[in-house]
Image (cartoon, rainbow, N blue to C red; front, side, top):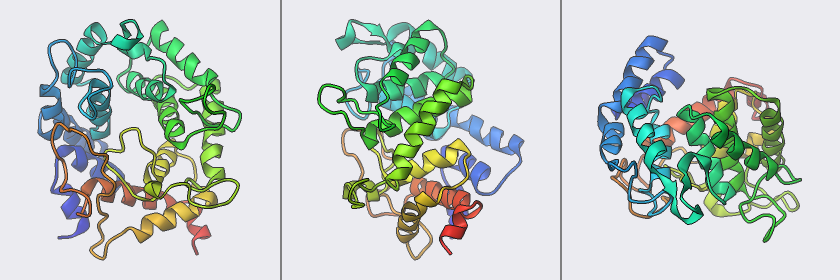
Length: 312
């Protein structure tokens, strides 16, 4: 089967993104397909698992990966339309009933102590159009925790003064979502630019001082990525910003190309194991529609911009 046909022979969550990012279908057709995420397939299954108290899995962050935080992150990755009635009802239940028990029952969308978690919550609050003083304070806190090297680290300042790729990507995704879904802001734009330079100066996966690969896990592509960084996630973020490709991504792009199988598909890799609501793919080593979709749209971004010349 042709790779595009194979991608389209899938859940609505994948189909609408293929139609938007790879086959350039009309906006109306994309919107119609996207609307099905709330009523069919994986999206509808996840929405049906929410408890009356607003929680998934009985917790805000644990048990992984079925907690409220990770389920909402997955719904965002599926592309659940934020304004769909099913989404609004689910978010209303979270807002009204879900709190961080270990942080004095503070409201879910106000975040908690860890920068990593707050980056995720900021992304969710932004995507689902949550506004107000509670989220404003969360944003201010995240911005204030940026380190001198441009990134973030949830172990700073007590255990580290150097940034973490894992924390940095979570915060960058949160800031970008805030700017796209709520409103542009010069402070957020400046913080994102500094954070992006942190990633780019390190070629998305290399030590700044030695040039060596920091960890081999980052060279394997997971879905869903959960809180973990990897090269494809970094490239997906940069693509989503709308910026032109930067030549410092060339090593990362080469890695993406090398992971492509002879049949034109990319495999699922390095699954972050814990209990899940259900399986969306066939396991590590097998062809992955999610990774194939993500890799193809990253390569389309790269090949359509200045980055193409750095590979020739």
